[in-house]
Image (spheres, rainbow, N blue to C red):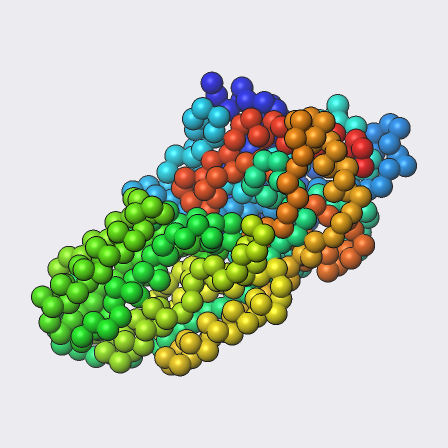
Length: 470
């Protein structure tokens, strides 16, 4: 079986076309132009703004002219992560789609179902002449996976929607009616260097489960950057030469590396090897494929000073990371260290605090910042976006009725700890009723990402009926 043979045919056709186009966050020009061309080819009213958001509209079908306008919303960008041995170039190579039973996945890379599948569903609706609907609008944004660039810049002056349906959640049968807000922090240390005083070792952490830092932060998975701090803290004579970890600010770090000098190599190896054994034993349930390799190394040139190296290790070790609060099965507050990197002048890492409640989000960010500053770091808040507060609306009842009729079971109505653009849209369209749903996607933001074929068909049928009844 090939992708073109899957149902609904239009959904998989458009998903395949999207998979041919580079669309990593910040590299959306080609896919944005593709969406504009899609609209123009169908004589739809279309607008592309300066941030490459695309908004297009379609008139109601016959007999539905008096219906309220519905906006279908998703984001065109994707998280670009690949397996360590992959030579995939996200700037030019198409995503290679594979079928494995009920799942579509990719060959060694993220699939981009988050949110390519949402966009594909929207395009299918606009292209399917059999769908009955009132006036339709599509709002497809850029930069959602970084800092919600497009949604932050949206001009809603020509958007007439009474209802907004976001297609960017990842669990079949779940209706999302609220989401967490987020706050990004950049923690940086100015480099201070000196000659090395000891022998060199290298740590290489890989194979950890990683995953979405919102949706999977409660799974207890190891963060490879945080774990690197545990391995390096209080090592005598530590002088860091190189270090890096993670790939995305909103992903649990699955890899990290460090090259460093130590005062007494044998003693340092003994301590670190014991810590490795402890960590792998502690995490064998959550990260069964995790690997931590310690080996001798060499390095030419100056290294970070012992004082600065100690401060960096202490910061990584002590900064809080992971779940803060969960209530009634819903994640309320968390934080995550996403990326550790360096350039010629600085060592820096990104942290993200999330919460449904703004005060809790900012409090978590403040704790991270206070700890980092105690060890001499500079901290910057890069951006913040508000959450989407749950509301009981008529739209929820309609959606639940349809799902029960089609599947025989009721939808689970809940909020999500992932960031959705609905909160930002609520700010500029306060009277719009919103909900979010989507087909089952597992492993988003990781090379194991996959989307259910059966769930995709089920959710398309649900969306078609929802548009008919709203």
